[in-house]
Image 1 (cartoon, helix red, strand yellow):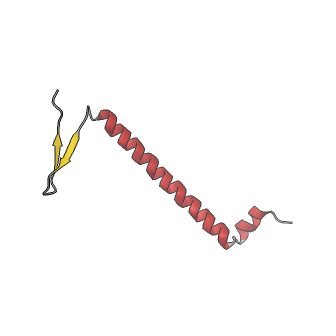
Image 2: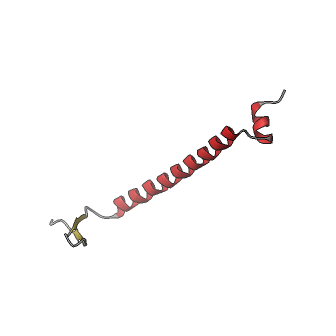
Image 3: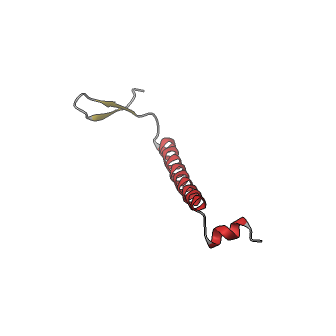
Length: 68
C-alpha cells in the first residue's frame, strides 16, 4: 500500500499540483512583502525626521521641511 506522498511524487493529482504552485506563489509574495517592510523601516529610521510632501495642481510633488 503506497502512501499519499509517494503517489503525489510519482504522478501528482491535478489538485496537488495546483496547491503546490499556489503555496510557492504565496511564499514568494510573503518574501517580497518582508523585504519591502524591512526596506521601509530602514528608510524611516534613517531619514532623520519628518518629511512632508504636497502635490500642486499641476501634478508636481514638492517636499516641505517642518519649521523647528
